[in-house]
Amino acid sequence: MAEPLLRAENVVKHYRVRSGRTRATVRAVHDVSFELARGETLALVGESGCGKSTLARTLVCLEQPTSGRVLLDDLDLAGMPERRRRRTRKRIQMVFQDPFASLNPRMSVGDLVGEAYEVHGLPDGVESARAAVAELLARVGLDPALAGHHPRQLSGGQRQRVAIARALAPHPAVLICDEPTSALDVSVQAQIIALLRRLQAELGIAYVFISHDLAVVRQIADRVAVMYLGRIVESGTAQDVFESPAHPYTRALLASIPTLTPGTPTRLDGEAPSPVNPPEGCHFRPRCPHARPECGTALPDLAAVAPGHSAACLFPQIRRSHIPSEGQP
Image 1 (cartoon, one colour):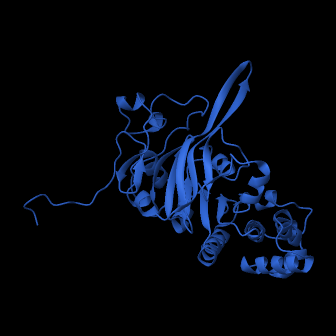
Image 2: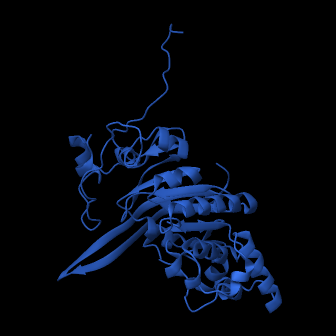
Image 3: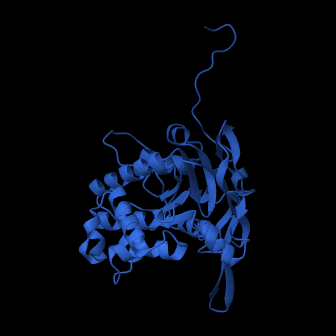
């Protein structure tokens, strides 16, 4: 892979909670590491509650990690002073799931996008800022005349385009897209995915794309990291993860994608355990159809199952090409 632009190194985010007189620890994100290259899309996938959104907020320092580091261009975002972090953080921006909730309803579209320029000091002058806002709106497929409108006057797809324009204003190198299409109709989802792909081709932006919709992920991701109970349990290229999944959780997620082809896919039964009290050994063990006694003795780490493809499973299952034995054609 090319020189990493963004790196997460053993990121942990725990929360202390109280239940009656008892204090407990919610292990929302635990020991997550990955790298993101310039112009690449890494998808983080998993069920609701697996820690994807908490990790996203930690990457942009909306949440401080309990331990570990988030490095952008080898600069430790969480470890630097706040004033310096604000200057550096303009290179990593976030697009949230619900554009209606993330846009101030009292502000016009022009003010919402222009506010990013005010915060980060780009560009100089009112007229220059207006021209820059108009250019950004056009770039994301909106009529610049909408600058005078308010979010309530826009459709869901238009609001999400405004959110993307606002994130692009400080010229970021990385966009963290937290479920950016899940609140939209299917036809609008396709339009937003096409927009993100075009912007990436034009601007060279890298994406961390967070989603539970694997059909959407397959359209946009270069690499995929599968999260379960706060940990990455499988990672690899999109082709490897979709065509040769090694972890039983990944296979169950893929089997849940709606299809018109009849078959007997692996089902994902039961609920995910509580992050306050995860099971001993492999956290997926209570739901795994292939669990063995050994799975209850140790929490497996990510290990290579093929070049560039890793899984946190003691007994990974992966389809491999047939290699003829000696003497066979």
